[in-house]
Length: 153
Image (cartoon, rainbow, N blue to C red; front, side):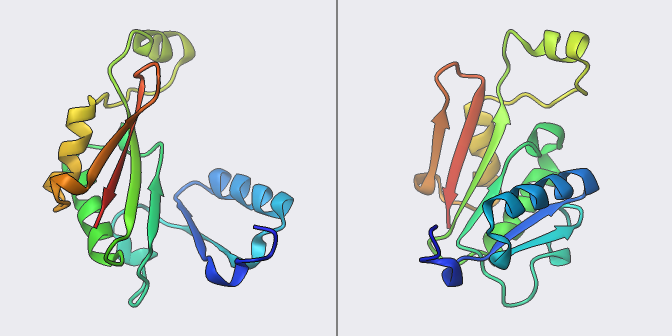
């Protein structure tokens, strides 16, 4: 950022984990960007816990959350985000796709069970939340394990 746009950017990091928030605060301190970053401990729903009246984000990134949620919670969350966002704003979210490594990840590494979804599945989440299909784009990483969606209001 080089100090050029600091007054134009506001970052809000939301997590229910003290450890995750502390990690974020360490990174912000290392990058010396603390002047425009706010940390909020909150559950993802309801968004009224951190999206105050009059706050209309232009970009929201959700990574590492939807892999553990039921469809109804994701759709409600995306719907609430869409309602808060400025027109033309975008939400970027992800989900791990079904893959050959998922048994290893859970049975050997010990990660808790995730909800694996195809790229078609995660696009439907945005359409269910009210995003128009022509304003939804899928980005698939080369191995096809991790899918990203960009949905624009």
